[in-house]
Length: 88
Image (cartoon, rainbow, N blue to C red; front, side):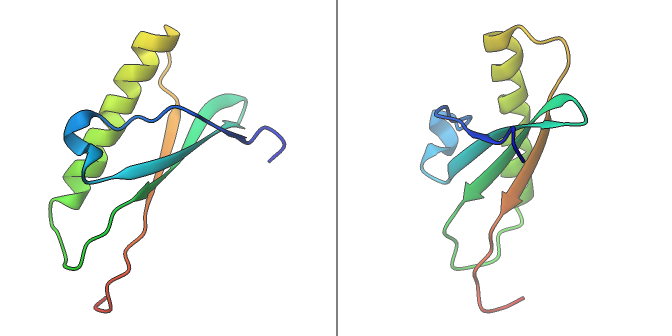
């Protein structure tokens, strides 16, 4: 927990920008860089496409990290989607 640092960057592209906002923390996990990404989305209904949006977010995050930081190893990304509908 001592390595937990709030990041100023976002991994959300223009296409997903109107759907998601995020908060990203960088942390060391087993001596590797990892990201904990809180994805915030307001939905008033169940959406089967959410899992694909999250996967796209992860892939684009990795692409940004590899290009921007010239990393050879992909960091762990732990996405968290908060669902607030009354229905389970």
